[in-house]
Length: 302
Ligand code: SF4
Ligand code: SF4
Image 1 (cartoon, rainbow, N blue to C red):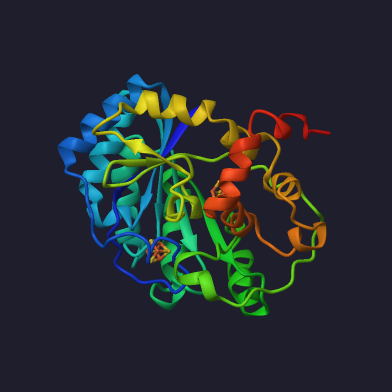
Image 2: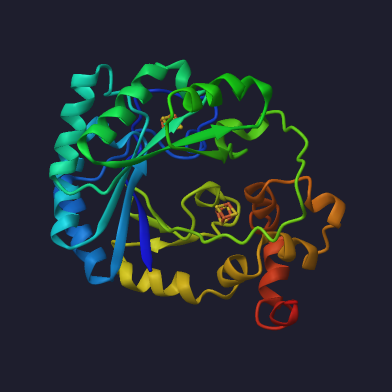
């Protein structure tokens, strides 16, 4: 199924210390609304079935996003908005936004939450937003970004205490979080297969990865092209047929790293996106993997 993270604007109203996007992209790029509408038509024609509005804080442009969500509904596309809940200052204000989006056909809100977000956004906003979704019949979940340190215990406790639906999500050590202290991992050696959701930036550049990979500037490994030059359907097709991307999806980052010569002991010390960066944001290593994408890597399956 084709889905896309849609970056309408990079603008955000807060500045989180862990933000992956912050240092790699120019500030405040925004699509024109008419252009975004045209692109959504192209995406529908490319059989895209789900769009997640993300990038900076989408709901700074609430009316535009509501209109785009309505357009997606007309094309029968699933929609999600990722937000920091700055707008949910009271139950009444939360209701007005949730109802507006729900009326346009929004399927889900994803509320970002962490000890970094909450330096700028009161926890009460998250509660107001989640309760409003529940009350107005809009699906939601809370994305609890954590580095698994004890400092996050109270933040997790708050979610449990209020019976909110949440999923822990590891902080990505890229962008502003690049130099954060890493705690040791206590988990198994895992394949780290990655589904790779593509990302469309406000510059109209499309990437095969919507997370750290869209900022691998040394190789531009995940850059698919710009939809001003190439229609989205073609960029999706390129993403789906790229041999190395398919190895990431099916074989996983750990197996690729092992193939590339990383010791098992070293592999377990990295988070998935960090290891991905080691492999694919190094021109030399990438060259080596490309040489093997149709040969050695094809027989590197169990
Ligand atoms: S709310 Fe999201 S986009 Fe804005 S600074 Fe924080 S992490 Fe970055
Ligand atoms: S593992 Fe690589 S492809 Fe997957 S989200 Fe991280 S950077 Fe992107």
